[in-house]
Image (cartoon, rainbow, N blue to C red; front, side, top):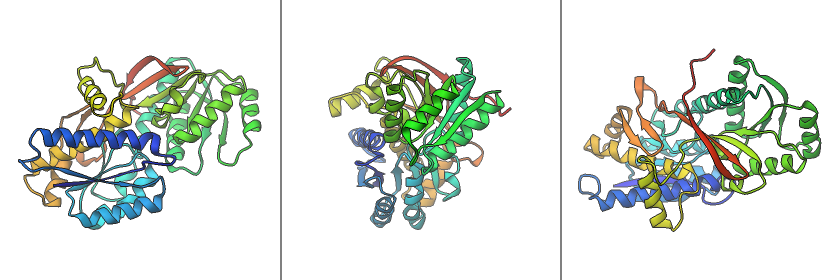
Length: 348
């Protein structure tokens, strides 16, 4: 039985996708070690999208020719949109491990998220900021990235509904970075919310800190990046899919198995998302009792109470986005010094 996987193993998306691909591979190894699915071996066919939507599309079309039971992968909205044609053409499920746009299921009716949506993580970030009495914000957005635009919009909506003030807002692409940090300083906000991909986020944080601006920088799951786990980054708070702890009853076995296979702990929670995506799809394949794509799609849609490393997953009421809590992780100069699970309240 074959599962296709598309991940960007190089380029701007690699900090998220490389760990996720490793988690996916670990899941397949564990499934096969336990006897496979209904006694049949599972093969993971991995294609490198190279952080290029055109290459991702090529991967999806090529993999669609391989008689797959389903596809998994990717951590960015634009990349998943590029991958959708292959899965849609083959009539198989596509389970994105880490792309968080709540609009993605509209692209193809066989497209599922294994992760929370941007609306949920942005609301969690806004609510957590208010718990810290951070009432004014500079909102910085990577304008060429769909993920960043959506995340910023959802954050703005929730933050302002709570009574927060957006003191300054700017798109990052092509901006004069020196003028940008000067404008942030003049606005004197309590915090920055940074909606950007991992590479640009690390660059902006460095420039802000170099300018002597020490206010907390909040952001989405793209800030769960090795670049921001280094010293000198000050206070960083981001929404994550899990806090991976080898002493946790939920994540500990995964952390230890990952370390055993790769010789180091998981780089970030995206590793666990890749693992969960494969395990979730495999569980649906097993329940379907068939390689028929329609049977697998139906089984996936009927998932209830799947226990994953990143949380429990159910697709309730025909939705293809799980209702999961958001782990807010706080870093001080690259070291975790706090975390909290936030389940956002109803819209105000």
